Length: 193
Image: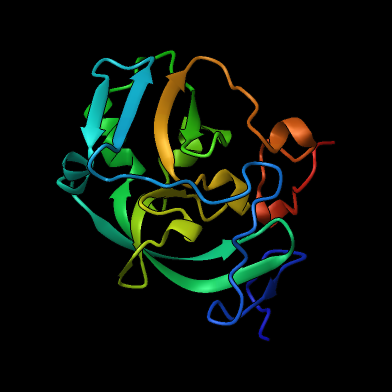
């Protein structure tokens, strides 16, 4: 497959043939999410903490963002058309306090990760609920997942339910197990040094 313009150490795969949805060490099966009970909690160092139902979340301004998706295992899926809410839209809603520098994500399966606010304010970072025109399937993080194209996929948390703005960075699930906390795909930054 074509590999030009891919980050170092990555190879393109055909998403129709293989889209790796194995999440070893977290839970044996994908979580069951009831959209009637689903709530996205956004709190911490913010002026306006919110709890959004599924319908509340869908009512936020949405956009399409096309990007490549890079797994730390070395495979990439090209030209994914994600549709959802820009993370910066959520930032505008909750109004982070000046001391808020890091964001911690908690997911329905117990998974966690964190990112710097500056990484999440990029134009292509979305809280996606559709992929290539279809509602996001549960094995790919549905009903909603974070998409951070310039980071390895373990930073693009699936089944997001709780977002906490914080003064300090907290290591997430894979970062505690030796993976890089920065996860920059263009620097081949896979493992903690």
